[in-house]
Every structure is written in structure tokens, then in C-alpha cells.
Image (cartoon, rainbow, N blue to C red; front, side, top):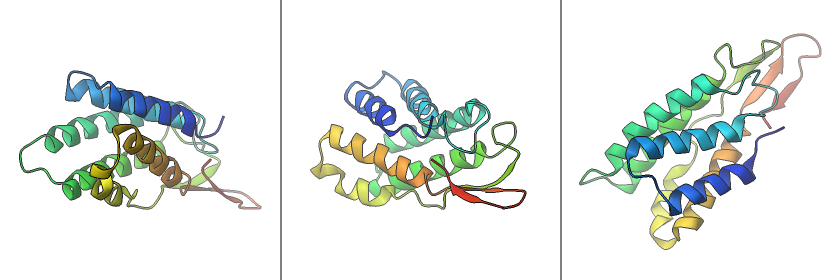
Length: 158
């Protein structure tokens, strides 16, 4: 099963409209939603990316906590989330997550959250979550894997 945008979108809209009562709980839920999104990523994963999910969760706790502090800015919030997702993608290609028959290249940074945060005030929370999940999905699909034997086929993650 390939990357699952529909599930990610539904999960993030649900989390945005009904957040948990703590940053740690919200981070765990967001990380779980992203794990569900990548479970079937082709051709990279040979497991379900659980180790990468732990890294994303820790990064999101830090990001969500900082985002709630007085003086937090939309631009700063975008940078925090960019860092979290770039780390997450990097973890996906570390053994035992990855398929050893390919050389993997993570999606290039940035994910593209800055314009979304700049426009955030003009969107409903549901629209924001939908835009956020679409950005993650589009960005993940820019990762590539190259077969390490002839014909050395390069494929985008899907």
C-alpha cells in the first residue's frame, strides 16, 4: 500500500478539531498519524517506521511546546515543524526501516510549511489541517530510491 493521504488528512483534521490535553499527547497522536501515512511507502520501508515515529514524536513535543510560548511567531513555528519532519524522513532511511536493495535519498528540505503558517489566520482549522497533510504527502513523494543493481532504476517514494 502506498503513502496514504486520505488517512493522514482524516487523522490530522480530527486532531486539529479535537486536540489532546497535552503537548506530549498531541505529539504522539500526530506522530502516529504520520506513521500510518508512511506504513506502505514504496519502495523504502521494510518495517512500519516505528523508530522514525519515536523521533518525530520527540521533535513534535519540542515544537508544540515552543509554539505555545509567548512571542512564538508563524515563521518560527514553521521552522520548528520543518526540522521535525526533516529528521523524521532521515530516520526512515536508517536500517532496519529501509529496503536494502535501494539507495535512498530523503525528500529535500524544506517541506514548505512557511506559506501555510503565513496564511493560517485566513483558514479554518480543518482547512489548515488539510493543507498541512497535503504538504507532507507531496513532500514525502519527492524522496527517491535507486536500485543498487542494474538497471539502477530511480523511483520516487509513493
